[in-house]
View 1 (tube, rainbow, N blue to C red):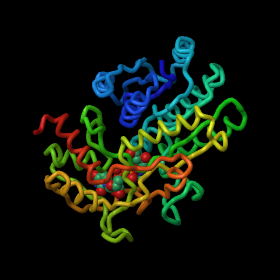
View 2: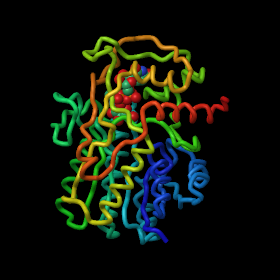
View 3: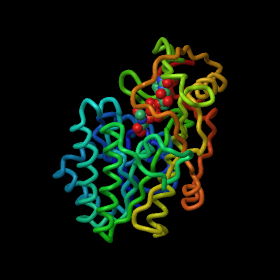
View 4: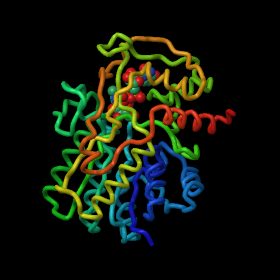
Length: 342
Ligand code: UD1
């Protein structure tokens, strides 16, 4: 029997890729997911990739009673990766309470249960959104945080503060927050990937859906930024590379290698790519043209951000490996698979 890890949100986009990497390293995974933004078939797909079926419990983390029953039943869990959260920036502006309730209370319940059921190790999904538009690039973990642009972003900033405070007051708990840059791409098997509901908000699913003919054209939000080609710059990180960072973080916790009981790391490639570069790289990788038009800037977008990954590289011993080209190809292969395109 491998060491048990609970993955909340384990059927979601990043969660599912992380479950695959954990299982391939011999961990025994238990997923909690309410399937509010994913499907039970993901469990079958994970089994197809790894040959192992993760344990799966379907419920919402705000169901405190059910959560307690869960921890009474599974009493060998050694670590938790907490992905389960709402993540749509625009929606969070219209439904702030739903975001604060869902994202913050679930974290607090998890932390409470960690104390109650003597689970010491937590990896938390944070975001580069905590930096806002930084004054200096690339951003290091010491770059000052800025006020959040959206309730969603604020839930990540507040969650980090909650972690910091709780860890200080609870000597048994150690936590690592991973600040993701922009996760993209899909598993090379094309059995799991991103499944946005409705019209995608994020760039790469919009590109793949446009290439697949589902959307007539991609709107590029602004080409008048102070960047070399005028479009915004982000640090696009391959989702499998990102998943592997979680395994590294779990091992660091289980091996008691942390230098403090609350650590946080930037998880990106260290390289910025502009929106136009992403479109061109996609076209080159896939041979498919993307119909696009330049439109006005999107409110709330920052001009550019990319990570300084020195700490992730040196302290965690992790680095991004898959190129933007191969990552975009994996996103396309996934889109083709789910749309039955040859
Ligand atoms: C967004 C969130 C971020 C969140 C992440 C979750 C904002 C300001 N930030 O990141 O907090 O963690 O999603 O996935 O919303 N673009 C286009 N056309 C499109 C879509 C996007 O030109 O149809 C451009 C955007 O202007 C941006 C880049 O592509 O420059 C990436 O956009 P997106 O994928 O939405 O990610 P972020 O906005 O960086």
